Image 1 (tube, rainbow, N blue to C red):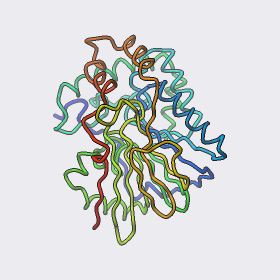
Image 2: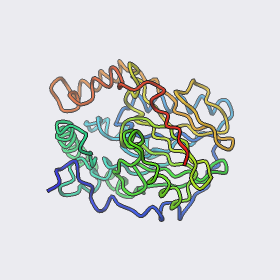
Image 3: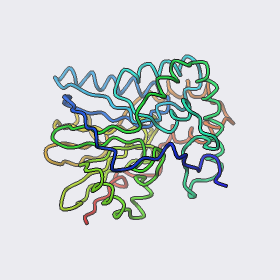
Image 4: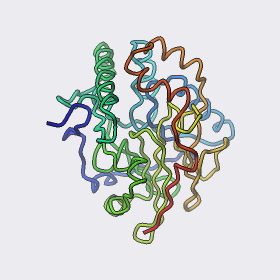
Length: 317
């Protein structure tokens, strides 16, 4: 029997051919795609400040949250504050939000962790979602809004078809666009997904480590951007979050990495939130010995083992 936290519920699955059947038009000048906020309201403060700074320069910014904006916000006040602010923007589900709105028997956290993820991480994530589900139970209005969210969103922006996902084109919790998948070589599946969806770019999150990939599919340049996490550090000794920024205008802050296609800049842009203020709130909710402290506090302090160059995966086929 598949263990909780490693299984992928049937309700998470979808057909890649359906993902871009409906395409919306964006009139924005800049897209911020924000995955893995994880309840970090200080990161949300900074992202909104960044957007306001762009607005002052005459650029309209559309914020798109592609799931897992809840996780560490295990208090009534923080849970409501994060969700109410996120709902004011374009939003799709992550597995965390799905399990808050419609808990799946046997799914645990709904992360569908692969075998390379330590079982201790899996068990702790299952207990974190259980605690967050107890908080969410006191907010039925928010749960109803979460239940109504779509699982993906396809939009035309700057002449390109941008497919915004939580995970990969087959599942809300798939790991096919994870850093580890690119490192092992996933060109065949990528080609199939791009050919089936017709997308020019896929923008995702879920798997916690950032990726910026470019390649050729059917002689067309395609891209994948996985921002890793907006609410936690992503690079070595760098506690800043990352978001995906897409625009014909270059980023006003130095990006970790950028690719340009047909006049659009696809960038991984840092979110320099107030780490000390966030750690104070985190530690109050998740003190020493708690599940989130054991799994995530070191990353909040020090980031990951990745260097900036490790996020790039150039390839052609």
